[in-house]
Image (cartoon, rainbow over all chains, first blue to last red; front, side):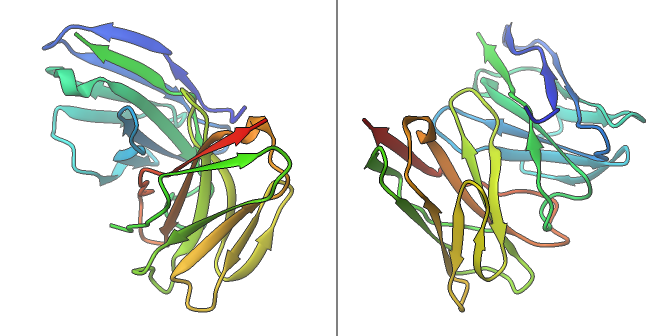
Length: 115
Length: 110
C-alpha cells in the first residue's frame, strides 16, 4: 500500500462526455502527477501539480485539465471524451518534485473505458 | 525526453538470479537512474534508485558502470510473484516528469 488512493477504480463513459477522476495523495506529499497508460504501453505523463500550481505538462490537449487542493488531493478532468482516452489513469504523489532524486508513490489507478 | 532501451521480455525459472539491462545513452550529468515494478492493473512501484557504482536494498541491486550509459537491475532468486513489468528511467532535478518506456516484461516460470 502506497497511501495514494484513487477513485473510482473503474468507469465507463460515452464518447463526448466529461469525466472527473480523483486522487488523495500520501500524507506529507505536496506534489501530484497524473499519467495515462494505454494497454501494453508505459505510463505517459499528463501534468504535475506542486503546491496547487501546475508545474509541468506533457503532450496532452487542453481538454485534459486538473486541480490540486489545499490538502494536496487532486482531480483530473477530461472533456469531450474520445475512444482513444480509454486507458488506466494513474496518480502519483511525492514529497517534492518528481524527476529529481525523489521517489514517486503511485495509486492503483482508475480504469476508464470510453464507448 | 529521457529515452531508455530495455529488452521487451525475459523469462526466468524460480530461484534464479535475473539481470535486466537498460541503455540510456543520453543520460545527463545530474540524472538519477530509477527502476519501477508494475503488476497488472496496478500503479508502478519504486524498486531502487542510484547515481553511480552499486546500490543494494532488500529487494534488488542496481549496477551502474562508470560511463553511466547503461544500468543493470539484479533480482536475486526470483519467485513467481516477481512476474511483472520492470521500467528503467532516468531524470534529474529540474525535470518534473517521469518518462516511461515500454519496460521489460519478466515472466517467472515454476
